[in-house]
Length: 328
Ligand code: RIB
Ligand code: CA
Image (cartoon, rainbow, N blue to C red; front, side):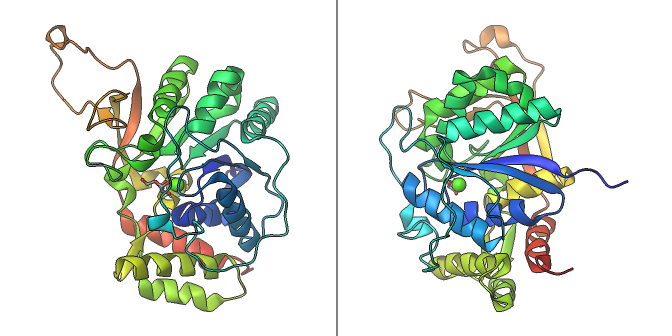
């Protein structure tokens, strides 16, 4: 008997690669996309909501509720990454706004309700944050009981090694370090398992320009065409023959956990460092530990850190899923 589709909820700052993740989450038969919450990040939150609705329209999923969340980090000023994702946040493709309105609830309320109904149904969701963690921090601190409806958190963020927003920090965590620290602390308190899909694997699953052109050729303003145009935008921006599917890799890891190699490692978020603020400090030391001489001691929180990914298999999963949309 086939396994039941995995209930999944995404938190996004759509974003070219968030859109790639949404297209996969909305169309893969092994997933049951229950809700999408939006947060400011790659683009201002209202652009994120608009872009998210466009991606779900392309995927034929007007049924999935989308809600507007935090428009700025808990403490930091809001910045964006439009130099990476285009002025509109989604590759400046000029696609029409979706006819579907956003859900009237705040994103934290939508997340709360999705988790509560999941708990009631006895089918906890996999929560997949692909953006700054502001909404998730607010959710877990305001409604801790939602933990009963969350089977695990698979988040794109952080890095065991180098950053991207700075030499030291990855964009989602750098954008709202306090939120990231709160989420890791709350997840530990509430007993929620966490997988960190960080920069150590983020760039590995890539799709070629030629494969993107094949997706675009499907046409019809569907998931395949949009996915192809997003990859092509990044290939053109970087003047390269391939581009990462980014956030979509985290969704691939939900579909097929064998794609990832993870290690359970202690982790902290640097909040105070001048040059290291927003760094996820992953303790890679493999000695048995003479922590008595380590003034910091072992971090109270351990997460499964993705240290390797089968990039080609991951990218192929994304590409084939989009190509198969609409085929019997
Ligand atoms: O550092 C990469 C992350 O920042 C991705 O989620 C990308 O969409 C941006 O939000
Ligand atoms: Ca993102």
